[in-house]
Image (cartoon, rainbow, N blue to C red; front, side):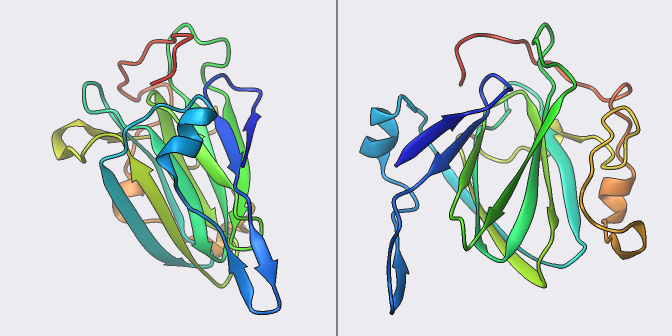
Length: 189
Protein backbone atom coordinates (compact mmCIF):
# COMPACT_ATOMS: atom_id res chain seq x y z
CA UNK A 1 0.00 0.00 0.00
CA UNK A 2 1.32 3.43 -0.94
CA UNK A 3 0.39 6.86 0.38
CA UNK A 4 0.64 9.86 -1.97
CA UNK A 5 0.63 13.37 -0.51
CA UNK A 6 -1.03 16.04 -2.64
CA UNK A 7 -0.46 19.75 -3.19
CA UNK A 8 -3.23 20.50 -0.67
CA UNK A 9 -2.20 19.75 2.94
CA UNK A 10 -4.28 16.95 4.42
CA UNK A 11 -5.60 15.49 1.16
CA UNK A 12 -4.06 12.10 0.44
CA UNK A 13 -4.37 9.44 -2.24
CA UNK A 14 -3.99 5.85 -1.14
CA UNK A 15 -2.93 3.19 -3.60
CA UNK A 16 -3.74 -0.28 -2.26
CA UNK A 17 -1.85 -3.42 -3.21
CA UNK A 18 -3.90 -5.18 -5.88
CA UNK A 19 -3.40 -8.85 -6.67
CA UNK A 20 -4.71 -9.61 -10.16
CA UNK A 21 -4.69 -12.67 -12.37
CA UNK A 22 -6.85 -14.22 -15.11
CA UNK A 23 -9.73 -14.65 -12.62
CA UNK A 24 -9.92 -10.98 -11.67
CA UNK A 25 -8.39 -9.18 -8.70
CA UNK A 26 -8.28 -8.99 -4.91
CA UNK A 27 -7.32 -6.12 -2.63
CA UNK A 28 -8.04 -4.98 0.89
CA UNK A 29 -10.29 -1.95 0.80
CA UNK A 30 -9.44 -1.17 4.42
CA UNK A 31 -7.04 -2.56 7.03
CA UNK A 32 -6.69 -0.56 10.25
CA UNK A 33 -3.12 -1.65 11.01
CA UNK A 34 -1.87 -0.87 7.48
CA UNK A 35 -3.44 2.58 7.61
CA UNK A 36 -1.85 3.17 11.01
CA UNK A 37 1.54 2.15 9.55
CA UNK A 38 1.02 4.94 7.00
CA UNK A 39 0.34 7.40 9.85
CA UNK A 40 -3.43 7.48 9.32
CA UNK A 41 -4.95 7.15 12.78
CA UNK A 42 -8.60 7.76 12.05
CA UNK A 43 -11.44 5.76 13.54
CA UNK A 44 -14.10 5.29 10.89
CA UNK A 45 -17.59 4.66 12.29
CA UNK A 46 -19.94 4.83 9.31
CA UNK A 47 -19.86 3.38 5.78
CA UNK A 48 -21.93 4.86 2.94
CA UNK A 49 -22.43 3.90 -0.68
CA UNK A 50 -24.21 5.46 -3.62
CA UNK A 51 -25.21 4.35 -7.10
CA UNK A 52 -25.32 6.95 -9.88
CA UNK A 53 -25.46 7.08 -13.65
CA UNK A 54 -23.33 9.02 -16.14
CA UNK A 55 -23.58 12.77 -15.83
CA UNK A 56 -24.65 12.82 -12.18
CA UNK A 57 -22.87 15.34 -9.98
CA UNK A 58 -23.25 14.93 -6.23
CA UNK A 59 -22.03 17.75 -4.02
CA UNK A 60 -20.41 19.80 -2.86
CA UNK A 61 -21.30 18.53 0.64
CA UNK A 62 -19.90 18.95 4.15
CA UNK A 63 -20.99 19.12 7.79
CA UNK A 64 -20.09 21.93 10.17
CA UNK A 65 -18.08 21.25 13.32
CA UNK A 66 -18.50 19.49 15.66
CA UNK A 67 -20.12 17.08 13.20
CA UNK A 68 -17.57 17.42 10.37
CA UNK A 69 -16.45 14.19 8.72
CA UNK A 70 -13.22 12.76 7.41
CA UNK A 71 -14.02 10.60 4.37
CA UNK A 72 -12.18 7.76 2.69
CA UNK A 73 -13.68 7.54 -0.81
CA UNK A 74 -13.38 4.86 -3.51
CA UNK A 75 -15.20 3.81 -6.67
CA UNK A 76 -16.21 0.15 -6.47
CA UNK A 77 -17.72 0.21 -9.96
CA UNK A 78 -17.16 2.65 -12.81
CA UNK A 79 -15.22 5.91 -12.88
CA UNK A 80 -15.78 9.16 -11.00
CA UNK A 81 -14.05 12.49 -10.74
CA UNK A 82 -13.81 13.03 -6.98
CA UNK A 83 -13.39 16.63 -5.83
CA UNK A 84 -12.40 18.16 -2.47
CA UNK A 85 -12.48 21.92 -1.75
CA UNK A 86 -10.43 23.38 1.10
CA UNK A 87 -12.74 25.33 3.47
CA UNK A 88 -10.21 25.81 6.30
CA UNK A 89 -9.65 29.45 7.26
CA UNK A 90 -5.92 30.36 7.28
CA UNK A 91 -5.06 27.38 5.09
CA UNK A 92 -2.44 28.14 2.43
CA UNK A 93 -4.82 26.46 -0.04
CA UNK A 94 -8.11 27.94 1.21
CA UNK A 95 -10.67 27.91 -1.62
CA UNK A 96 -8.56 25.62 -3.80
CA UNK A 97 -9.74 22.23 -4.96
CA UNK A 98 -8.23 18.93 -6.00
CA UNK A 99 -9.88 16.52 -8.43
CA UNK A 100 -8.87 12.85 -8.53
CA UNK A 101 -10.13 10.16 -10.89
CA UNK A 102 -11.21 7.10 -8.91
CA UNK A 103 -12.24 3.91 -10.67
CA UNK A 104 -12.68 0.17 -10.39
CA UNK A 105 -9.58 -0.06 -12.60
CA UNK A 106 -7.12 2.11 -10.64
CA UNK A 107 -8.51 1.16 -7.16
CA UNK A 108 -7.31 4.49 -5.72
CA UNK A 109 -8.79 5.87 -2.52
CA UNK A 110 -9.09 9.57 -1.69
CA UNK A 111 -8.69 10.58 1.96
CA UNK A 112 -10.51 13.85 2.60
CA UNK A 113 -10.13 15.28 6.13
CA UNK A 114 -12.55 17.45 8.04
CA UNK A 115 -12.71 21.00 6.72
CA UNK A 116 -13.30 20.12 3.07
CA UNK A 117 -16.38 20.14 0.87
CA UNK A 118 -16.72 16.94 -1.16
CA UNK A 119 -18.43 16.02 -4.40
CA UNK A 120 -18.05 13.83 -7.46
CA UNK A 121 -19.16 13.49 -11.05
CA UNK A 122 -19.86 10.17 -12.77
CA UNK A 123 -17.77 9.72 -15.91
CA UNK A 124 -18.73 6.13 -16.72
CA UNK A 125 -22.11 4.64 -17.69
CA UNK A 126 -22.77 4.00 -13.99
CA UNK A 127 -20.80 4.09 -10.75
CA UNK A 128 -20.95 2.69 -7.26
CA UNK A 129 -19.09 4.86 -4.76
CA UNK A 130 -18.24 3.79 -1.23
CA UNK A 131 -16.90 5.95 1.53
CA UNK A 132 -16.04 5.62 5.17
CA UNK A 133 -16.72 8.46 7.62
CA UNK A 134 -15.26 9.18 11.04
CA UNK A 135 -18.42 10.92 12.30
CA UNK A 136 -22.11 10.19 11.95
CA UNK A 137 -24.42 12.06 9.60
CA UNK A 138 -26.04 15.07 11.27
CA UNK A 139 -28.81 16.71 9.26
CA UNK A 140 -28.71 19.96 11.25
CA UNK A 141 -25.06 20.59 10.41
CA UNK A 142 -25.28 19.59 6.75
CA UNK A 143 -24.14 22.33 4.35
CA UNK A 144 -23.08 22.62 0.75
CA UNK A 145 -21.69 24.77 -2.02
CA UNK A 146 -23.14 25.00 -5.50
CA UNK A 147 -21.22 22.65 -7.82
CA UNK A 148 -21.13 25.33 -10.53
CA UNK A 149 -19.63 28.09 -8.38
CA UNK A 150 -17.65 30.48 -10.63
CA UNK A 151 -15.08 31.22 -7.91
CA UNK A 152 -14.15 27.54 -7.64
CA UNK A 153 -14.32 26.96 -11.41
CA UNK A 154 -14.33 23.16 -11.14
CA UNK A 155 -14.15 21.21 -14.39
CA UNK A 156 -16.45 18.27 -13.66
CA UNK A 157 -15.59 16.75 -17.07
CA UNK A 158 -19.30 16.48 -17.96
CA UNK A 159 -20.83 18.49 -20.85
CA UNK A 160 -23.32 21.06 -19.46
CA UNK A 161 -26.23 19.50 -21.37
CA UNK A 162 -25.58 16.10 -19.71
CA UNK A 163 -25.27 17.26 -16.08
CA UNK A 164 -27.78 15.75 -13.65
CA UNK A 165 -27.87 17.44 -10.22
CA UNK A 166 -30.47 17.19 -7.46
CA UNK A 167 -32.65 20.21 -6.71
CA UNK A 168 -31.20 20.21 -3.19
CA UNK A 169 -27.64 20.52 -4.53
CA UNK A 170 -28.67 23.19 -7.05
CA UNK A 171 -30.00 25.32 -4.18
CA UNK A 172 -26.67 25.40 -2.32
CA UNK A 173 -25.09 28.86 -1.94
CA UNK A 174 -21.91 30.05 -3.62
CA UNK A 175 -18.50 29.52 -2.07
CA UNK A 176 -18.42 33.13 -0.83
CA UNK A 177 -21.89 32.82 0.79
CA UNK A 178 -21.41 29.36 2.31
CA UNK A 179 -21.35 28.94 6.06
CA UNK A 180 -18.21 27.28 7.38
CA UNK A 181 -16.44 26.99 10.72
CA UNK A 182 -13.16 25.23 9.91
CA UNK A 183 -9.63 26.35 10.75
CA UNK A 184 -6.35 25.13 9.33
CA UNK A 185 -4.13 23.02 11.55
CA UNK A 186 -0.97 21.10 10.68
CA UNK A 187 -2.55 18.15 12.49
CA UNK A 188 -5.14 16.50 10.27
CA UNK A 189 -8.19 14.88 11.87
